[in-house]
Length: 316
Image (tube, rainbow, N blue to C red; front, side, top):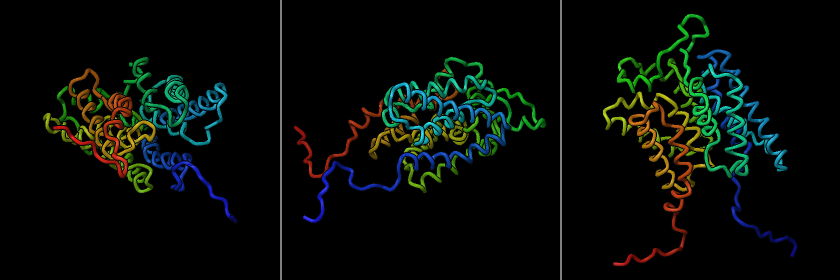
């Protein structure tokens, strides 16, 4: 034999992309939202984002070193986690709290479970939920977009979802939601920037449009059935950023088609349930985390039949 026969386990084909390439594409897709956040909320927004990313990188490096594991800081996943967490925070949050959220996201939700690919919930959402429970006042302190220019009043009474909860939907302009001219977290307010990023990820085949479309579509349909304005519901809160960037996390969502469908519908139903019947105006974070936890069960019941396997006979 002149050549050597190599025997190994699947997969035998490689898509040509590694973790770093995927994370780099996600970072590129988040740049429009980052630019929009700085334009809407000023350089204080950039400070929050830099602190979150730097804290996430430091937490990743130190935790891997303490746990005596190979360093993974170069795969850029900690940068994505830091950015996503920052995009889920108000511009007024104290910087030390933003740093604390990043440490929780990386150390508790990611590294304590083995690192990237072994976490069972989205780390950025865990960081946000911990901050919401620990510092509810600073996590709900909103200011008007463009207030940093001095031409707009810095204080805002309520976010669009809070106005919906108060039956004040008439005060909400859908066009302002599209361009981010409303109170909210840094990266969630400008829907058009998030859509640009989502389209980029689909074109690059980093994500499938299945989960975002079904998630957003479920919220739209349920809001309409419940007598709410569906357009306001899909453009308000963290639905866009959650559906595009966090519900599609490789490690925490199902891998097969029907599993993705069930998962996305579940996210949409829980989101609307919390928004309309819960004590909190927003339910995206909790909806995605709950469905992350249910992902193994969903995959178990939606597992495709292996090629060549006969179906079990149904007893009459």
